[in-house]
Length: 236
Image (cartoon, rainbow, N blue to C red; front, side, top):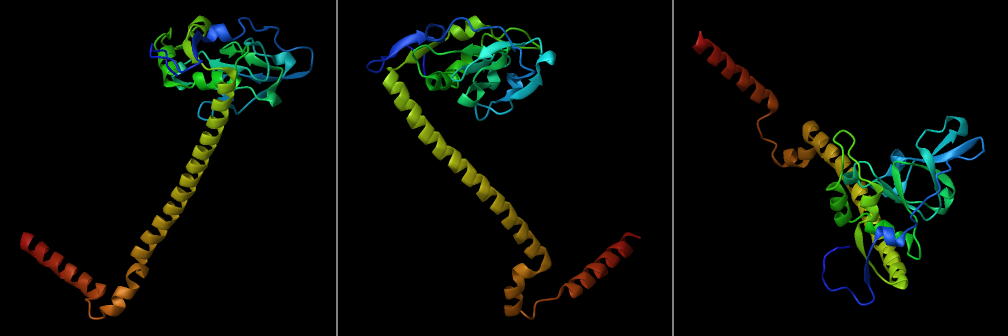
């Protein structure tokens, strides 16, 4: 994703997030049911870019920020601390939930949700938002900052193809990371076993058999004690 003026790929166009998303989101908040599902900034895993911790709350105890009515396919962007890039796409299982007003909602119009999610994960987006934050203790961007951000838009079929390719590549990457983590755990166990073998004598058992006349440790300790005694007497 880039906002530079380099030549565009064939069929692509320049646009802004505001031009390809719904401008106004319903702010009715939780309805008359006893409980509701609530999504706030802490619900988002900013590493996996998924909603990891949706909360079920009593409607009577709804937070004042619980106002936005979200749909599956919405892309939510935390307006606080944009450098952390807490963004996520709402899956089908989280249709008709309530979102915090601390999230900006990108509801696509004739554009793939997955493309929007890809766009707001880029370094270009993170850097642009980080440059316009306001407030020191509670740094945040405004909805207009997000909606005014420029991006490149491929044709819809190419968006779908990119999404499929990304899913495949990122799945391979996740599998690779998992394999590395398993290997790291095995290496830690192997390291521990080597250290134990080193300090218990198992590591050099074969070497000792081939070198039976090596000075035993008891004689080494005796020499150390004699040397210490001599050094002590010389210092008196």
